[in-house]
Length: 131
Image (tube, rainbow, N blue to C red; front, side):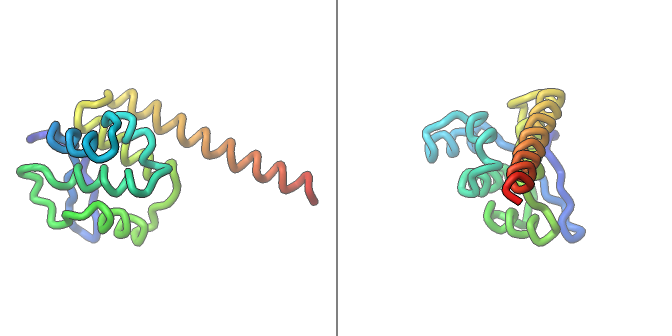
């Protein structure tokens, strides 16, 4: 398969793609379609780990990491954090897998980043009001 989202971790290349088999396994596990799981994964560690694992394990990927939980933890060790960053990864996987277009992935990333920013802004305003 030619299309995949590529990450670099400690000099290692990780290729992520959600194949039809991967989408089927996610649907069977969660009872939801792939796009719904992708949209929810940034706020749900179990769904994120399952999405990463499905995206890691496709024929020809040559990934040495096989566990979604291990990849998640390694990303955190590399400094990844927050819904915007992990949601962005889920949207990049969706685009590489043909579930959304690159433009739709960009729009989704932008919407999540804005929602997170607004949520923290509201928290800061509430904190200022209570002081």
